[in-house]
Image (cartoon, rainbow over all chains, first blue to last red; front, side, top):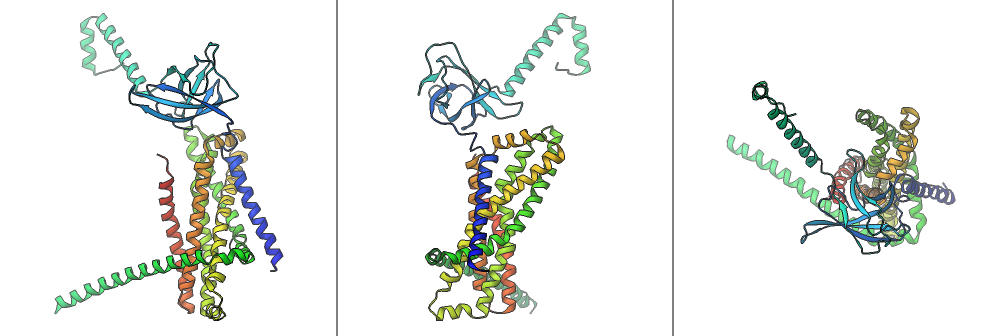
Length: 175
Length: 268
């Protein structure tokens, strides 16, 4: 096979490879969607960030407005300090609320911003003071169980003690 | 009498094991020496780039068909099998993520490297082995042409260039195959298929890491094939054995390296 034909085929081969890589980057990967232009960073302190990770989305009203830059532990206040990069196109009032939500029941966690009513705006380096921690499923379940248990105790003490004795005879029903 | 016989057989076995170990280590050293020589003499293969282009044609372009066809089937099977499990949890839309991540992170680089070892690696070993058998390499040396610069280095760089291209083609074609099964055949929503994929495949962590893997596999597979050819005894049997060894050693090296690279790339 002569040289020009080989060159042609190799050119086609390399072009196919570049096209595949571009396809992977644009259509499959998040190169287009994660593009956030100029950002400003603010911090927010949480008592518990749950399983929030760097690069998690920051959403307001469901729209991605930024990304989590990093998460550090403040050993003086014993809090987690989360640095958030927000797109410069958006501005938020100073008393914005930062919550940690979970996408779906088992999905990844993200930071949700809820705008307040202050007239001043958040600037680079500011700190969001109003925060709400991540929901820890175990805590929620134990709270639910405790409240249920105290309810059944109240019910049990309200009725006569004979019935109470009977129920323990039958076995423990927690609810 | 019996005791000395037993002792003899034990020493012979131990001696055999030791001999084989030393042989392996010797081959490893010779392979590393060939690798460094290839790097040093690879200026030639860039100066006379048509030599490398020719080898890209034989290793890369000729492997296109096998890579594309197998990628298509691998993607389709992944989608079918993934759907089987995912639908039990009511999340069949995640099938796009499953197909894309497993192809980009693992199957793309690894299966391409295995196919490459079988399709191109054996050809390289047999060619160089035969060149040695017919004393073409010695003839080159007589003419003051360095066989490493003229024969080995262009093939090495061709392999290193071809592998990432083949691997990204494999991933892309595999995802298209998965799409064909998931969307028209099974009836997963078209938008959910692509959007979930885009939300969960990271360009740097998944795609670039897969590409790095394929470059490393390219270096390993091509180098093993070149060394086995260069080191083959100049007989018909020697060349055939060397070709077999190329496939076995390349496959094992690729799978072992894959584990090592994955554990390095893991973000904990």
